[in-house]
Image 1: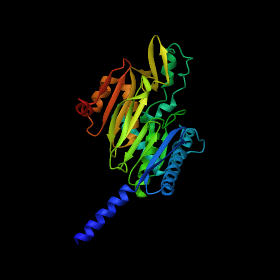
Image 2: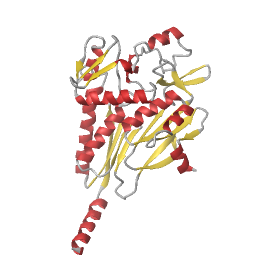
Image 3: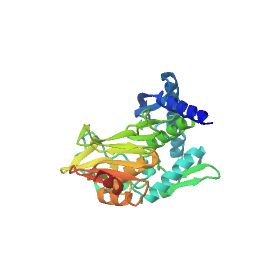
Image 4: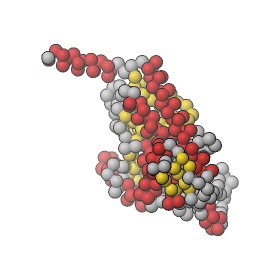
Length: 326
């Protein structure tokens, strides 16, 4: 019996340490994805990566508002007209999105897509649009007007011209789904990185935890902190590329769905959470809430942490991370 146990242990060690890391980078969902897996050979690793890619493409076809044939586009097209029958997967995603909207008091809202595009982040906007124009831009925004019928599997947007979009949660959801698929296939460890929406599982072939670097928003080529991440997601959002300067103040491309005004005061937000979907939505929410309110909000959630860099260059940590770095 002892010999069998020893042999099994040695076989386990051999299989673990014979694995290597394989990765591929490509554009999916309009952004850069990097898929990393551990496998016993490049051939096997490539097969796993392709399966993850296929899953992400499937998700994009379901939730993309740019694809006129997607279920999401069909829902938007029939806003104020009639309910639309959709897959239960889309119903579940929207149900969770509404729950997050309630949880964040509307700082996150998938009906933000209803806003008229009055803000441009190409340098052409130099002054605030009128209060009347901004008020009109949010007239059709409101998650309360998304009606789900789980029994009939339908979605109805009550106001004509209303739209839903998954720009604040879609990449995280796709990363989570690709991760779940690979785990079901027996992949022991990996990372799905969707342009800063990152989720991990397992460990590196060496047995070490995956390391995630948080970029300095004032110098994107530098990392100001490294963190070991095990079976968690990390999402980093920043306004250092898409913003406008008005009267000497920087306003980000993330718009407050309740007011129609761009958020300001925060340069970047990194959220650590059990799932990338949740981290994605909360990172957006913190931009809208601002540093002080955002930190207080995150400190009430036991399983979530965050790092906020404000526009004065100061770094703020939620309580759990603050205890680790001090």
